[in-house]
Length: 189
Image 1 (spheres, one colour):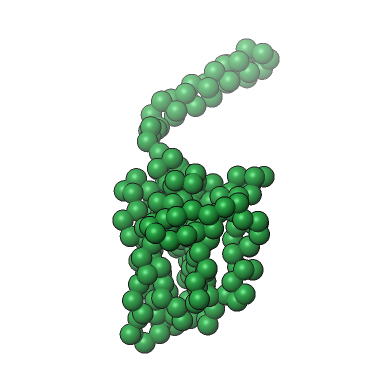
Image 2 (cartoon, rainbow, N blue to C red):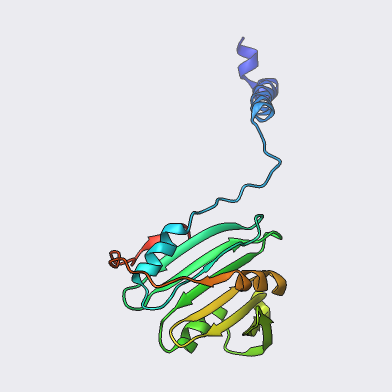
């Protein structure tokens, strides 16, 4: 027995036993071939935004069924900002950001990571400004209304961003009593 605990042979036997244990563990551990992207339910943030925002909130309706909502964050009191992120069918990122922050241009520039317009695009009969930041591969669609700035941005391609922008529907103003301050409502990041 003493010869198995000393020298190279003892080391080789111990190593073989360890490798067999690891191999058996890997063999019985299930692996998934399908991708899993965690999804969030943003309906509560949509309701809270309608209750808290001094503007009519825009909510995506009828996004493609293979898009996954991945994050929702509602912040503010008076100045209300809602960010809603999606993994698109191509598994790129697209985000809707809306806010009544003033001046609206500062909010838009921050969300787009650039202040330079590269053109416009018609979506559903409405003109959106296009912005592109090459070093971040970030595309952005911007629409500034009198009471709210809408930003659709991400690494998704232009058609995917246009799909998100086209899905936006302005919600009727809430007649409910305003909800408690949504200063840190978050369902993701």
